[in-house]
Image (cartoon, rainbow, N blue to C red; front, side, top):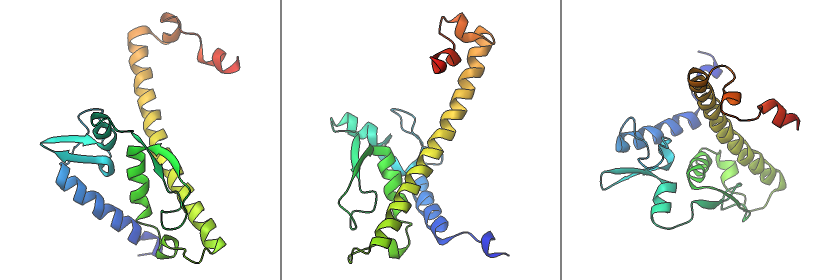
Length: 167
């Protein structure tokens, strides 16, 4: 086996955390409020599976939270993110190498490395979301074409996307 063929310790740890959550929630668990299915944000209480944001909404709390991009122990700077994304991003920080988890000496190179890793985590989350959005849009386009024909937007009285982009 080549070195690149082995699963990284990060991937093993992430898979173990995901498997533990999946066992607790059930294999096809999804939020009964919105359908969110990413296990990092799901909880099960009183026989109900809800995502973090739906739980917050039901309790009258904000669904957006402040995320420490470089890790709470390293930098006080935060950015607002949706609660479900915050769960995923915080989970990803658990896989950071030990050298990135602490920077008590405030080494600028480690600080920059933390920023790179934090941004990389954000981009990975967005890549996952954007891939799902693309698949959803493709399914929506197919349904609209079946119901209203190949130029469905005209049938529904919606201006052409291309005209809107150019305008």
